[in-house]
Length: 231
Image (cartoon, rainbow, N blue to C red; front, side, top):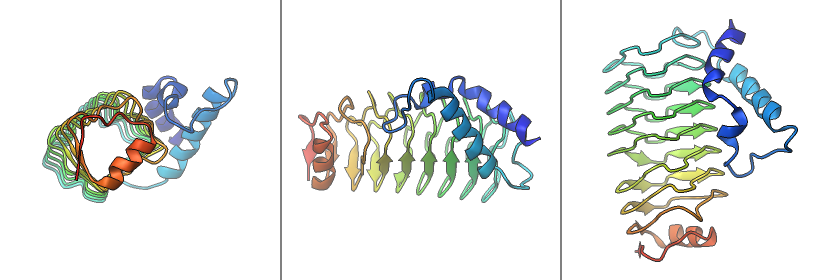
């Protein structure tokens, strides 16, 4: 049932308040924080998984879906822990309210895919195409982004604490109301990147190259920019 699927996927989040705690604008009063966030997740889950898709609200833990064509598929509300999507075509696929802990998307095409309210802890996106991919209210701790394509990618109300963007090229990427505490962009190239209402004060930009507008936005957010190149 929808209720059982909800409980299965949200169990991976543990305490919902802990996941969202560091995200700017997500805090509530102490006595309302936990129940309020859980209620929000539950409401979002029911709204996002109302589909008859063959792959939504399904237990696909540890499934081998590498090199498959899943373009446009809705995998929302599914248990996908340790699932393998390496090299898969996932253009415009939906992963809303899904448990994706330790899943692998190496070399996958995730153009315009959506991840909403999902647990992406320790997911591997190495070599994946995240052009126009949208992440909203997601936990991304431990995510791997080596050689990942980031063009027009959006991270909204998400936890990117300690995430490494080192050496990557980011074009038109949007970080909105997200936590970038102790994240690192060392040696990366940033072009037309937005950090609206995101925490960057303790983010590492050493050796990064960026345009003047991106630099100005980061400076207004009190980012440490002593060793960056502006062009």
